[in-house]
Every structure is written in C-alpha cells, then in structure tokens.
Image 1 (cartoon, helix red, strand yellow):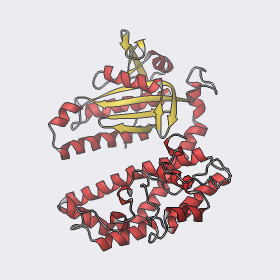
Image 2: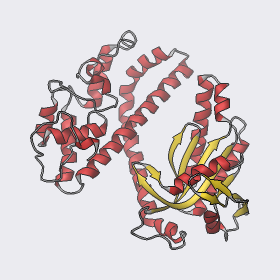
Image 3: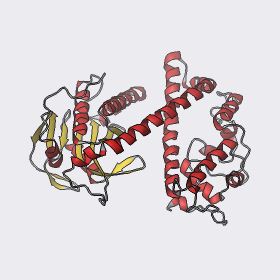
Length: 397
C-alpha cells in the first residue's frame, strides 16, 4: 500500500493480526503537532523551543501536556505496540497516518491513552468492522482535520487576546497556555457534539437525498459508473484578489480572507451544500441537486456584489458526477467548474449547457446562453449565465 505500506527500516516480524495488516489507532510517524518532538524530549516533554522558553512557563506546559495526552509518557513504540497486541510495523502505519513524528526505539513517547486508542482501532479491524485500508484512511482523516482545526483554534484564541487585551503576540501565547486547561473539556464536548451532528447530516444526504440527485441526472447514472456521486459543483473566486493583496498589510489581508471564508461557509451551509475546501481567494462547494447548487451560487454572487468590504466574485456551477476521496472531490465536473470560473463576469454565475438543461423548467432561474467557447481540456462548450428568476432565493438570518 503506497508509502504507508513501505516502512523504511521496518521490523522483520510479520503482522500479528488475522486481518489484512491491522493498523492501530495510535499515531504514525510524520508531520503533526508533535513532529518536532521526535526524541520524546524538548517541547514534547514540556520543553518549549528556544524562541519561546523565555515566554512560556515550562511547568505550565508540562501540566497542560499531562491533561491533553492522558498522563506521563511511559511507553516506547515497541512497548505500545506490544501492549496493543500488534506488530510494530502495523502500529507505525497508523501512527504515520495520524501524523505522528518518527521515533527512535528508545524514545519514551506514548501514554496509556495512546495505547488504548491504538487498541480501539485494532479491535475494529480484528472484528472486521473495518478493513486495514479503511482504518488507515479514517485515521488519516482524523489526523489531518484535527491538526488544521487545532492550529485554527489556537490562532483564533491568540488573536482574540491580542485584540481584546492589547497585549503582544508572545504575551498572548503565554497567557493561552495558562488559559487552556479550563477550555479543554468544553472544547472537547463541543467537538464530539459537532462531529455527531455532521455525521448525521452526511447520513441524511446519503440516505435520504441521494435519489433526488440521481433523478436529476437524466437517468445516466449507473451503479458501475467510475464516478459514483451526482453532485452540483461550484467555485466562487474573488475578483482582483492578487492585486488587492499586494496593497494590504497582513492584518487587513487576513481580515478580508476571513470575511470571505465566513460568508461563503454561511451561505453554503444555509443552502444545504458542503464547503469542500478553501484555496486562498477561492472556495469549492457541492450540493446534492442542481437546484440547491444554483441557489447557493446565486446567493454567493449576490452577497459579494453587495458587500462593501469585499470585491465581487466570479461563480461557476456544473452538475455532473464526481469521485469523493479524503474529503475532496475529483473528476471532469470539478475541472469544468474551475475553468468556467475564469470565464464568468464579476458578480455573475456561469454554467454549462448540460446543467442549464437540468434547470430549464424551474422558474426560479433565468438562463442566458452565450456563444460557444473553447475551454482547455474540454474543447468547445456552450456557457450559460445563470440569473435569478422568481422567488427570493436563499434567506440568510
């Protein structure tokens, strides 16, 4: 299995599980919040780096670590794997997927909490509730998403302290270490709550609304289609972002990007879609039906046209089939939507003839065809401007 399946210097002992190479839920070696702690010392043992040692109290860091990782580090990697009943090779695959750092044999890095987590994932594979590949993929999703989430949360808390208290960044980071112990439990509860709500929403989309999406695909969908999901895929791209960013200081630029992302997230959520990812000045989203995608697209174009602090946005929408992997989506539908964004006029939504046909009989939308255009990778296409017809569109609180 690609890179995860080739452990450099891996142990010669075979996998000890009956399942296809069970991968424990402990965390793999690679990047991640503990990546700089490969020796199990330094910041990982409560020693902040040289740049921060004069700012953050080391004892505060040690106490916070004990609260976060469930106690002192008492286990080496072989010991953690052995106690979980799995080979070190298997454990390392999961640890790498989680984003854990590379470790020496003698590094005391793991806690009982790590061992329990590893055992939990191993048992899922042994009980055949997950395959090895699925377990690794799920652990990678958790590692990558929580890494980004934690960085985001810390930045938000530090920024709040800088702005509200009027203290410098270094002082805010010191204050954050002291403040975090009281925040861990409520943040953890909120995270679990949000995960369950998001999981329920995903189940609703998959189980209850998939039929509506497939029905809108003119019956061309089939179970053996290599791109299994019918989705409305859209992009929103801020106009003149590059030139504007050169004229702004870091704080103003950050505020503009944050405002853009927050507004996009709100509109896409209200419209029942999913924000797949943000890439600087651009967002990628999808929805289960052409109508939902059209409403979101029109709302995005309208919102940025009316926003006095942000430039207008070019928006595109294409209805078609996609492949979903690792939280992202792929396929010609995504590529065509991206190409159409660059053709759209500021403040407008551009789609293709196939998507326009799916919306043609809905009086909520007005469709304005244009002359054919040659689009790289697609040849000649027939772009269509999507505009508001009857009805108020999405209503934002």
